[in-house]
Amino acid sequence: MSFQITENMVQQYANNFRMLYQQRQARFRAWCQIEAGIVGQSKSVERLGKAEAYDITSRHADTKFVEVPHSRRWVDLQDKGWAELIDKLDKVRLLADPSQGYAMLANAALNRQMDDVILTAARGNARTNSGLVALPASQKIAAGGTSLTLAKLLTIKEILDGNEVDDDASLQADGQGATPSRVIAVNAKMLTNLYGTTEIKSVDYNSVKALAQGAIDTFLGFKFVRTQRLPTDGVATTGYAVAWSRSCVALGIGQEINTSVDRRPDKNNAWQVFADMSIGAARLEDEGVVEVACA
Image (cartoon, rainbow, N blue to C red; front, side, top):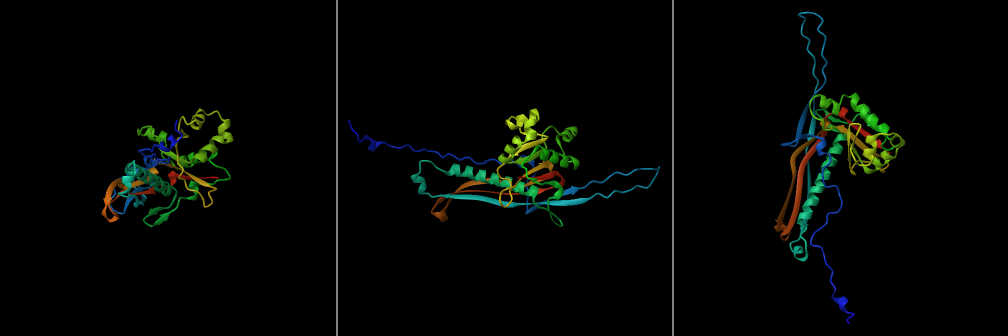
């Protein structure tokens, strides 16, 4: 018998690529007012404010004219790109062609960028005709040494309700269907802390239990969308959840994600996987967005 047969043993290599875990889809596009087909650097969103009715106290009285407040918010486009080269001769040495995998990575990267643009616009500065407008302090909930709690969720709801921001009940009353209108962006740590709070564990809320078990993703009229891309402070001790109503944040589309695989003569005929998009976002109404600091 031969004890040298191990010299001829071979290793089998895969003929495809596994895409490692990462966020692949844009999770907040569906929670924005879409401004599609933008041509130019920016697009305006025209706003009309509240104008109250008046009493008519006598017959044939003179007409009184109300003054309707007019204002404007701007959606500014940002260009985003992704590119990688595959050397022509490297393909000879590979069992698997990485082109398709690279294209999938590009698409995922740009989708994450779309979420970043939306989250930044929701809690950042909004551009008007006269300058930049920050999210008012009245729309912010301080950390208070706690993470996401039931009390903070109730405060978010109170702020939005107090501002007469669209909720499911009002939309259904208007005949606009039962699609949830409010969303809250949270990360995994915030959800874990929420499930562990005394209020949540001690109250026999069927919906809370279902939320904790992952059976549902709505509570108090909010659609919970998990993301690991929420902003933090400089030392990462405080994270910021963001809640808003769908009609209060706009996503502008100048160009959807476009992906191509092309030969590059200037790079010794290497293959280039390239993807780009042109998008922008803006907070349309300050009263419809709430920032929640979570320790």
